[in-house]
Length: 500
Image (cartoon, rainbow, N blue to C red):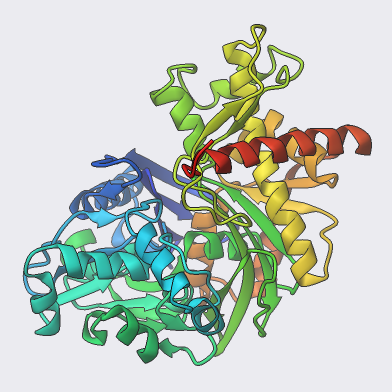
């Protein structure tokens, strides 16, 4: 009998592989970072071949760590950084250019033009999304328009497009699978989430040939099989979901109103809205959560572009910390931020502000400010951004959240989780397994192959590591939030070059 489900967790800065047992416990894991490319201000790129090679390396390492063989693996589930766009040759498998990462802002001007031409409502009604460079559609168009010869090759059917899940499935299967799942398709700004099909009107508007697009399948089900030469035998690829939807599933947020927040490179809050989409009036997006058991479920989402990436900035660019976990200790060396606020709008502001041109700002600096205050303020910025999204979500859903489930790397930071509870004025629940993104992918694959009986068994696996409760007064909370809002206005004002 197979002992494990293998989860590929293809993130924005690193790839991981985790083997989970029937209790949802981590039995083995491996992780490796890959390079980030910043060729121009606001541009972010990855090497797609490096994404594949590092993912394969950590998968083999995770198996080797515990001596697992192909017979021990029931299925593979894939979860991935979403919206990141890859176009490659159908025959050779060679990418036509570097992957354009979800954070990349190179298509912001074109996104603005679509809005100016009056397409906002049409695209929102069909896709649930706001028009923004964040999503895959404008990135695909950029590649077709700017990489020599690519449009002609695409029109001839020689090229394929995919997000990272599609790319990994294609490589894993030896080129036999060109598919994605409902959740990832819903992030492209090309997919009609009501009619569950690639939208011809949007494809025509952006001049994208449908023949390059992958087949869209349920998130839990057999996509195909890994090439036997990779692991020594075929393994079913049976689950796929974008990282945030996978985390929602991994947190067992199966009921309308259930919500979670993931602290990764970005920060993402999702609320399950059931089998009917809710369209936002407050700067959130409507997305497909997953497809399972013949049904499609929807979610409201608020996407924050920079969260854990702000801590990497403190480490790599500012050299204020040696490692990201150091931020918790450093923040505790001062009692507050000394009036300092950091707005990490390195690639613009996401939900609910959606300002593509805002830039990172540090305000309120006085002679008394030290690196400890700036580190603390950077951590606080994650909590403030989450609060902005939470308030918008409450307004849209009509379901004020009484608590928040959290996961992702930065949720291990006790200081940040306490500040988060203080700022939202509600308890924050951290699960026993914070790797809920990978766990969600494993659950989707395991349900499809009978490793787990269904969602009820998964709910029974869930456990809480720690609950953080608010520890400040409502008056203090509002004072802190008012300061944050002033800081955000400064970040937005920087982009305004209209004059004095």
